[in-house]
Image (cartoon, rainbow, N blue to C red):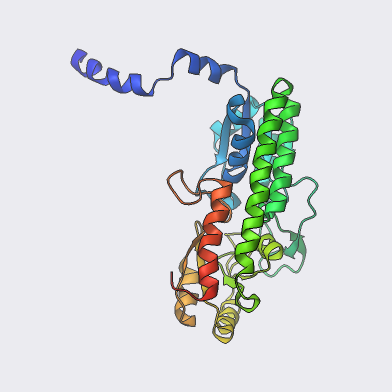
Length: 309
C-alpha cells in the first residue's frame, strides 16, 4: 500500500495546482458561458481575470444540450452569465430560473437585428409557417464584433477593477476580427458569383451567406434536431444536379446520414467538414472563433471553385 502511494505521488504533483494557482482560482470571479464560441470570446477578452466555465463545450451540440446538476450549482456562484439569446440557448434561461441565479446576464446578440427564418426548429414543429429569429449571428464577423463589445461591456461592469485591461484586450480582439472580416471578403470575392453555392447539413450559415455573398442550402432546418422531408431532399438533389453545385459539406455535429445519401444520389462528393455551432477540440482546426472562420473559408473557397478536396 505504501509503495503504491509513493508511486502515485509524482503524478499527483504534476496535476495538483500550486498554492498561488489555487488561491488565484479561489479568488477569481466565475464567468459561465453557454457554449464554446461564447466561451472563446470571454477567454480572449477577460484573460486570466476570471475563472471560465463553458457549459456546451467543443463539438457539443448546444441545440439539444442538457445541463447537469453541477452546471446549475456553478451558476449559483457566478459573477456573470453569458448567453447567445435569440432562442439558441433557451435551456440557459430555464437553468437560470431553476438555479435561482440573480446576478448579471449578458446577451451576446443584444443590439443585433436578426435574420428571420421558417420556424421549423428550436421547439417549433416541422412545417411551421411562422418566422423565427435566426440565432446564428456569430457567422457574420461584423456581428461577432458586436458580440465582443457586448461581452466586454458586461465584463467591465461585473469587474470594475479590471476594466482597463479588459478594454485593452477587447480592442485588440476587435481589431483582429475586423482584419479577419476583410480577409474573408477578399477570399470569397475571388470566387465567381455563379459558383457561390454551398450545401450544408443544417441551416446555420444564413448570416455568413448574407454577409459574404454565398447561397447556402440545407436539407435540415435551423435545428440539428429537425428532419427534412423526402420532398425537400429530392428538391435539393435536383438543384445540385441542375446548377452543378460542387461545395457539399458536413458539419461537426448532427447525423450525417441525410447529407451522405443526398450527395450519393446527386452524384457529388462531400468536400469536408464545416464548423458552425461549436468549436473543435483544442487540437482541431477550429479551436477558436477566429480559427473557425479561417478553416471554413479555407475549405469553402476551393470547393466552390470546383477544385477537388
